[in-house]
Length: 255
Image (cartoon, rainbow, N blue to C red):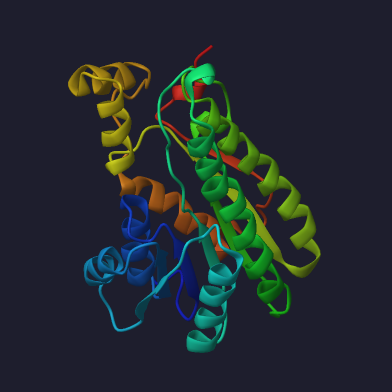
């Protein structure tokens, strides 16, 4: 079944684990895909993994307005429309108490996770609003956007911000058939979790601690997050907007 046949999708953070998994799935479902990330070599590898003649890439720092505008224009020029936008790029920062967190690292994290995501909306939404069928935007938040986590205040703050951004954008886009939803994963088996585990000292112990927080007892696979993204980008979810979707193995069901 080709649920995205004839549609065009942009995926930021396209060279990361979730980005590649989503790219593969969207291509399998008939979409033309543009991957966006910071480094060209990583993007070339990602394009090879995703495969297909209708897979391309754009190098961009999502925190820079001119570079965001450029990838949006490139996608529209190459494919003619933007039907789905996975606003997925993000960084994890470091694990430190608030008084020890470097100001420059805080600024960098907010620049990517908040400013970069907002800039994506700023330049993609007008394109979608001018299309007869609107479009679908999927924001990558986190379970960290639904609660607090000691030592991760900047990351948690950014992911809470994306929930508010999602709801506000959904209200702004509704009249023009632009739907905006958020996915809020628990730990996913990607590079980001390897980095956090390493920062906690004992990597195996850290992973075990995270697993114990998840009722299903394991990390999510990138493909499982991509499945939810596909649903939210497809016409199967055409009456869903402004919603926040935990995909967390039961993590947030616990009191």
